[in-house]
Image (cartoon, rainbow, N blue to C red; front, side, top):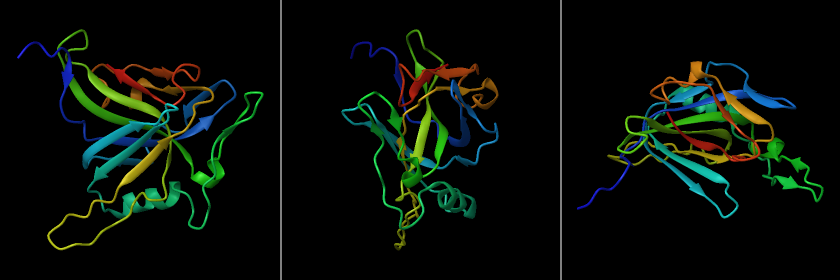
Length: 193
C-alpha cells in the first residue's frame, strides 16, 4: 500500500458550547466558560448540504442533569414552529433564531493529524450553531446504553467570529486565537493547530 498522505483517525471526544455576543463588526464569546462540555462522544458526524450548511450529529452517552439542563435551556421551546433563515433580495440576512433556538459558538475537537505539513496538529471545527429540538431524545431499552443525541445546525456567521486562545487549549496543540471570517467561512471552519 502506498503513502496515504496526511490522515486522522477517530475523534477528539470533546465539544464545548459558549454563549455569544453578536456585534456589528465582530461576534465574540460572551464568556470563556462554556455553558456545556461534552466528553462522552461515540461519534461526531458533520454533514454539509448543497448550500454548504453543516449539520452536526453527536452520538454520545451523557445523561446527566447538566446535559438535560443545557438542552432545555438552549434548544427551541416546545410548541415553537421552526422557521427558516432568509436572505432578502438586497442581501440582508434575517435569522430564524427566535423559532430555532439560541445561537451558540461551538468547538468540536477532532483527531490528531499524522503526516504531511500538519503532522502532530489537531483538526477541530469552530462555528455558530443552533440546537435541534431532537437533541436530548432518549430510548430506554434492555442491555443498551442511553445515547441522547446532540443535533446542531450551523447558523450563518454575519460578523467575524472570534475564539480566544484561552478556550482553544483542548482544540489545538498550540492554542492561538482563531477568527472565522464571515465572508469566507459563513458556516464555520475546520482548523488545524
